[in-house]
Length: 306
Ligand code: NDP
Ligand code: OXD
Image (cartoon, rainbow, N blue to C red; front, side):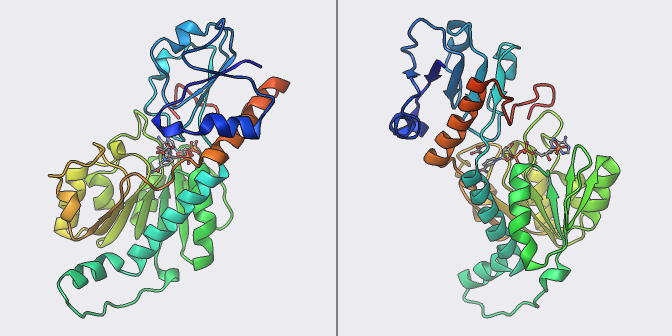
């Protein structure tokens, strides 16, 4: 099978990893595409001219879990778009979610603030069984996070576009389901993709539906969160804390109030980076499936945008 790989600054060293993991794979390295008859292309974001120069392309592997950075309208309709799904990515996200949940649950946000002011203050402890977790999205990354959260004993719930069933998790869907879940959520975790339907949904209405003093964790995309609504909800005390990994504008501008808000912990979009070896293995497994004519997993639905 003929495969074109488009290296960029994020994928330095990947050519060597492909060579080690799949020595039989003959990779062509963009822009040297030979006679342009490749059927698969692998890249973070397609460089200009990629689709025009590869008329026989059937599968386009994007090297991120989210595909909101892609202009799906530019991908020819017969080309399948495949997003990155890999155990190492899921584990990394699960670790991040557990870290953020425990930071909120054990009042680390407040204790960091106390430490800044040399204030010795003990806060009342809440047991895990009394701290209700609500997940927005019940996809690959959320399920990995739920598996790690379950042993702590938090009551778990989750909301998705289609109604799901997951052992030990109260599952919701639809507008009524969202309202019901939010009303019974102390820590809300957003792992929804950024699509025309989800953009801006984490705003005043969602925060007002949650119990006073609840907290929000956003590790999906900044486009989902209305940052000014979040700041207002934190200032008013409707929300007690936020842990944010993603922002409307990245890098987060130095003048953003989020940087120094005492109720906010933030990280620079590091919740789950692609692990080069894991990613290459996952792409190679998919290429082998394609080569055998088997169905490819994790293709993107262009209508839904994820
Ligand atoms: P999946 O596609 O596996 O899951 C998406 C989930 O969101 C599904 O449960 C889906 O519902 C649900 N969903 C989508 N649209 C809606 C909607 N309109 N209403 C309700 N539910 C909806 O995605 P992943 O779990 O793999 O990844 C989630 C996101 O995480 C990525 O899109 C990316 O933006 C972000 N991400 C962030 C990283 C970071 O470092 N911060 C790293 C990697 C990813 P249904 O089950 O019905 O399809
Ligand atoms: C991704 C990300 O979508 O790193 O893979 O955010």
